[in-house]
Length: 149
Image: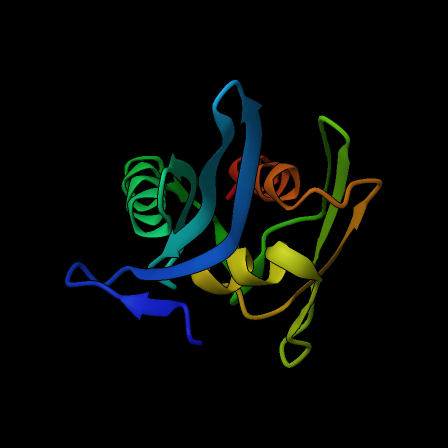
């Protein structure tokens, strides 16, 4: 199943995570869905959003609307990052480094998707201490917003 789409405004959308959340209530179980979505134009703009709903499509739509409204600009130099950055956000520690041309994206998890949607072609990095994809995504976005041109 391909979860990659392009909309009419030239933004590319990618669903990073769909999580089923279940809660015990007096009548039984109450289930909702949470969706983590990233959008980008591959020209330096990227955004993420989390949406929750009783079904998957409304959750994805809410996340997309939030991500489109809260996009950031990622400064780049020769299709790579402008400088190294080490950043801590909640439990996650992020290390992102620029790389020479031809290296590709040597990063894992959600970082690869976010840098790809931002248009960065060469970078290396590491996420330390956290396995939570939502926290990791927001940590990478914060780190990218702190980059200087």
